[in-house]
Amino acid sequence: MVRLITHNLLACHVKGCTTNNFPLVFQDVQVELQEAEFNPDFIRNMLSRLEWTALVNAAKQVGDTSLPLEQPDMMDDELLQKLHHVLMEIHVTDGAMVCQNCNHTYPISNGIPNMLLAEHEIG
Image 1 (cartoon, rainbow, N blue to C red):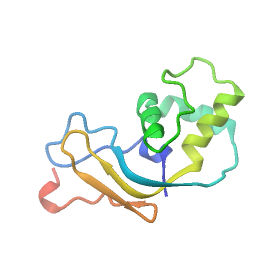
Image 2: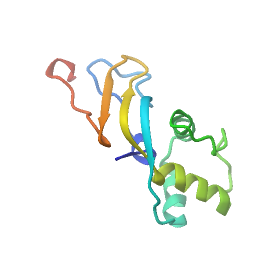
Image 3: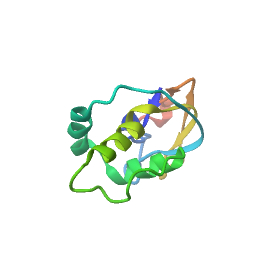
Image 4: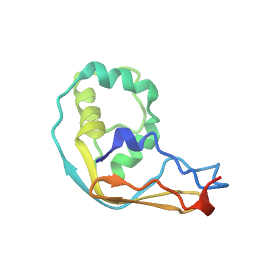
């Protein structure tokens, strides 16, 4: 399943697509919520690895508006719970991720993103 924690790491790697290739934009997605055990230490440790603006925008694209636009300096328990929900419990089951630069589409089917490129697209 594509979770937003994974999506926050993905960029387009089509030949010549080297600028504005992150983040990929969700398109026509279907989401499924799956409860996951809350681990506040894991969420705190992930903070430094996240691109906050990309995460907030991706969450909006899948229908979640619970995160603040700016990353807070301090994370209280309520915000950690919201972040956990966005990162770990929202699963994109179908749809696509599209590069903002080259418009390459990466389809998502049954929760699995197809990130393979055709031979002529490999750089």
